[in-house]
Structure formats: structure tokens, C-alpha cells
Image (cartoon, rainbow, N blue to C red):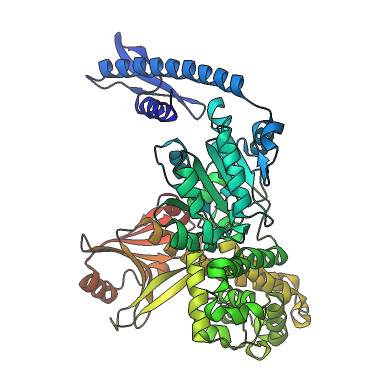
Length: 595
């Protein structure tokens, strides 16, 4: 049986009903039930009138096809074993690091039991589908699950497929000439499924990647290319592969996936660690954003180096444009860090050029000063200049007088362009009700843990300040928690806006600004001439003040005039979902999981 025939058989089996028919006697009458097992639990449902005959036929057909599949797999395995050669024979003469046979089994074993990301189905469909002449590109920043998905795909293979599968670890010492020889060697040995990890490390990859599609994929191989150099893959598609590749970007990890795959719940956990498949649990890696040192290393190696490495080899270094001088003077990381920390994420020339000040500190001081229950001026009395100067040093952010290269608007535009391509930033429109012609946007950082780690660095500097340490511990703790609460609140808004925009592509998602006040989010459907309006809060309790803008008659009338009938008014918060008058209060984790 060919792979395509086997895939068709599996698809047909998946369409047929699972389980079996049982009967229950109730009040002397016999009723049929469909019974099956799901996630280790036994489930059942009543068989509807007229449904019994088709269900029984489907169950019988499923069992027949499953038996046929088992027999076929057994025969294929016997043939594979009979024709197998030793790993040593396969490895002989290879220039790259190769995993096949027992070595490959040991390589994939660590992910046994890991949950799969939602995008895994794209990789599965490519491997088992009929697609030819195209390669599969699995790309994204470090620790977003690329190698784990490859291991999971190999682990699902039957023995016949596994015997024809190879995983190649590319290094910076390899080139396309060596890889070409190795792939021809594997092709002659009957290998069909080839996974090439970190292919962008090769200096000549971007300029010669068509080799994989035009030669090896065209001859019947399934080629999966993976790597952390996301920008390099984007350049490769544009320059070499065009429509001869399927691209899967893993960088953006929504809350619902973080929750399901890592098995830990809560928006605050996502704020602390979100952005990578890394957490201090049994799943995946250790925390990426646990410390300012690990965060800085991630920004440097995963983001700044990503851009630098790709530009170095794209068009043989001829595409650096205006960023070359920043790269040469080691100031690209500084610019990226400045944008991530800025509270409004406003990627403008002013943000890059102004002397660094912590927005979190200023806002928190004002809020703490006017607190209704226990107002405090503690943050007004600390050594703000020393704190912000130390924080700037920690975050590797350089002020204008320290920059050897003057940041221009051209630098800003190019950095923003590459951050967008890397899925590090995404723009959420800000609409001004008072002026239809204003074009404004809120740039959201898609890596929550990265942003939060820098906020924690601010807290550490606060705690080290002599003036701050002179106050009682309870007052210090209250002040620092207020700062972090402000940060989490703004980040919650960003997360909800970002994920809603990605999920509801048939609608326009934006923040609506009035002369006084705003709607944190509007979801507008042009097709139905209707909209939903939202307030987004980090609180666990509902208070009437949260919905004051949603219940403002003038604001609602102006909104309906411009965006159609308001079909729902919502407060998204951390409390329980409930209706309060005409406003529905929705738990934020529930909202994000249901997108």
C-alpha cells in the first residue's frame, strides 16, 4: 500500500463513528446507546430515531478498515526490516550530523507525552498528503516548539515511514554543496522524509534554497526545513522558493495554546512567561523570561541576532540598508529594548531618541498618590533619577548622548518592518471619533514575558534605592505591587486586542478614542453593519465604574452612527462571567480560550 493510499484509508477511518452500540432497559423498554471512550473516559449518547442502522454499518466498516490497516502495516514493517541497512553504513561519508534508526528513536523520545500545538496539523497534513514539488518551512523564534513538533511528527510514524526518515542537524560549518551530496546519498538509500534543522546557519542558504524544492522535493522527497532565523526564511521565500514552499510560523503563541499545551492557567502566568513554550513545568523548556539576564540573552540572540544574521547573508550583505551602521556599532539591541519597554509601544523617532524614563514609574506614582483608600507619596520621594539610570543600564538602553549613530526616521521604519516580519510587533488601529482622518495605531509586543521581565527589573531597582528602603516593608510592598498591577493591566489590554484581531479576521478590531474617555476595544463587522464595545480590566471584582463609558448615551449614539448597531457591551476582567444590567462581564481567560 502506498503512503497516499494509507493516508486516504486513515482519513476514511476518521470519518466513521467510533465505539459500539449498547442497550439500556428503562421502564421495560429497550433503548440503543452509542458508547465510546474519549480522553480515557467512557462517554455515551442516545441513538436518535432512524439513526441506528447507519451507525451500525459505520461502526462495522470502521472495524474492517482498521483490521486492513493493521495487516498492511505489519507487511510493510517486514519488508522494511528485510531491506534495512545498518546505521553505520548510512552514516558513512555524511558531512552533516544525522539521526536515523535507533539514534533517531533516542532523539524523539524526550517529547513523549507532550501536548501538541494547534498548528501541528499543518505539518502532519504535509507529511501524509499528496503535495509534491514543495518543501515545508517551520520557522519562528527560539523556544516556540519547532523541534518539538518535528519530534512529535516522527514519533507518530509507523515503522515503514520511520525506516525512511532522517533528521539532519545543520551547523555553520556546512554548505549547500555538502548538503546536496548528503541528500543524494539518503535518496539512493530509499529515504523519503527528511527533516533539516537550523538550515539558515549555512551562509549560502538564502541564495541557493531552491535546491530543496526543485531537485529533492520534485523527486518525491518530503523536505521539512526548520530554524530560528525567521527573517532568513522570509527572504528565502521571496528570493528562491516563491510558491514552492508551505510556511508555518510558530512565534505567535496565543493564550489558549499556552494554557492547553503547558497545562497551566491564568492570564498572570501568561503575562509572566508568555511568548515561548517555556515554563517551569513538565512541559517543554525552563522559563525564558525568568530573569533579566535570560530575557536580555533572548532579545540579543533571538531577535537582534536574527535580524543581523539574515541581513548579513541576504543578497550577500547588500540589504542592510540604513541598519548597517547600527549593527556595526552594536546599537541594534539597544533600539529594540527601548521599544519593548516603552509603555505605549510607540515605535516613533521620539521614543528612540528621547532620554530614557520609566513610564511605569511615573504612572504608578500618580495612581498611588490619588489612591482613595490609602494614598501615598512614596514613589515621589525615591531617587527617581538614580532608579531610571540604573534601569536604563540594566536594559542595555542607550540615551542619545551615548549613541554613536544618530537614530533617524529611516532606522525606525526599517526596525519596525523587521519586527513585524518576525511577529514581535503588531499594530492595533486607534480610531479617533473627533477626527476621522487621523491615522493612529497602538503597536503591541507579542511576547508578554519579555515586557514583564523588564518591569520586574524596575522593581529590583526600586528595592535597592536608599530612600525607598527607609519606609516600612508593608508600604514598600504595596507600592511595588501597584506598579506591577499597572503593568499587568496594560498588558491584559494588549493581549486581548492582539488575539481578537488575529481570531476575528472578518471584523475590524480597534481602540476607539473620544474627546474624553475611550472604548478599550471595538469589534466592527462591516458585513452586518454592527459592532461590539468592550472595556478591559485586570481586576477580579466588578464595580459600576468599569462600565461607565459603555453606558454613556452620547458615546454609544456616536458609535452606532459610525459603526452600526451595538450588539453587545462587555467588560472583560478576571472575575466570574455574569450579566450586570445591559453589560456582560466576561472572565478574561474564558474569553481568550473561546476565541
